[in-house]
Image 1 (cartoon, one colour):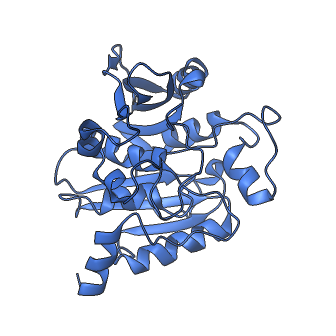
Image 2: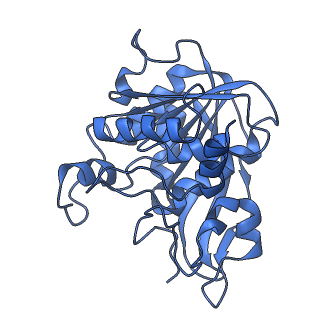
Image 3: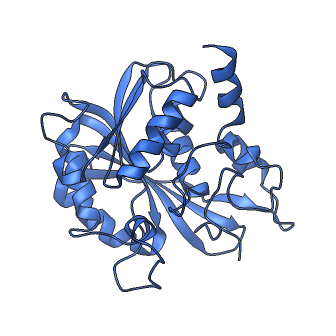
Length: 273
């Protein structure tokens, strides 16, 4: 790795290319990377998918972590501006040989031209959180696609993961806690067993707005419910627990904000009340 790529990685998640006027990634994306990192086998050679990859932030958040030199990830997104940004970011970070972006719908991930043809060890997914017509419409189509579900909703991502994962492979996702019953139903119907659930609180005693989920391809009967991850203390600063869990969150000089300077969502779901 040359010095320019090393410097770019040291700045991560700052400096990522994101399409002008598009939806900005937030803290939930970085938490997803950290969650997958905790569960995947250390220093293993694994191939993965990033469903709805956007600019690639979740994938790069995992690929730049220590011990993840053996990972290869293929990202898919319906927005060509996002996949173009993801390719630019892969080049800038020196990860173009380990990350490839493909423009298309998650329902198309079994086609012959998809970058990874064999069964994957894992998949990442930070899907649109909102059901159409349940919130304020976005000012442009790009943001609308990122915020509101398309035809088929989350079930499309669950089916894609189920088709592409090897037996025992893991599907890591982040979503609104209020929608967990529906998500678990879609996962089970697709043949993915919810294995681990990590609730995320903005601050201790506050509501749980988002949750991190690991589902496993194949049969399973148990669900591990982890203690909530508390992001902020009473002064609205990152807790030591949150920084240990996701070092990328600490890259933001102003820790009162919920997302890094690279352009996180101004109102991330895990923002303190």
